[in-house]
Amino acid sequence: MALVGDTSDRLNVGVTLWLASELMFFSGLFAGYFTLRATNSPWPPAGVHLDVTRGALSTAVLVLSSVTLWMADRAAARSATAKRRWLVLTLVLGAAFLTNQILEYTRLGFNASSSAFAAMFYLMTGFHGLHVFAGLVLITFVAIAAFAGRDSDQRPQVVVSYYWHFVDVVWIALFTTLYVVT
Image (cartoon, rainbow, N blue to C red; front, side, top):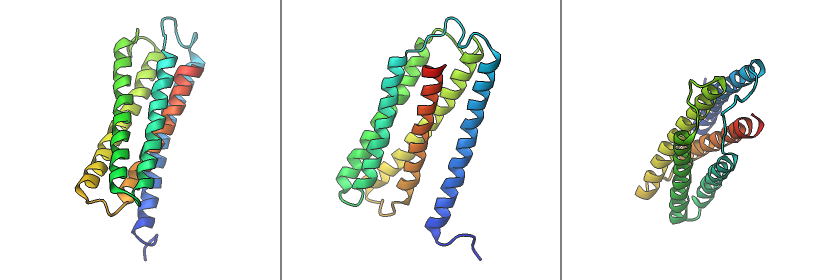
């Protein structure tokens, strides 16, 4: 006897468990950050200056990429061409976010060994960047299938969408914590 019904039920349970494990991972990073913040003074240390405006614009780009992926999901039933365009736009926006993160790393006046704040900043944003990269790879596979006309099963796109939206929500929490609240 199966624990759950059809394949999409099993897929939903699997995706939920996967995203829950990702949530626990990032929760651990936030716990580490706030523990270090509580035991280090001043926080952040002198010499740490993050470009909040640039970070906010980058955040807007990533949030917009969630909107475009949602539009791709919505367009899937109506127009294959529209779906493909929204997927490509999502890839462009996600790549722009990741490029900005890499450029920001080159312009920061500190490195990971400068302070506890710096270590957590690079750890948290670095792991998030890896998740964005993984999401871009997954969206690329969905787009390739869409361009090849092999996307009649929408479940892969739905799973990738859940993951992408999750990564975007994590970034909003990271941005708020690292750039705004610090």
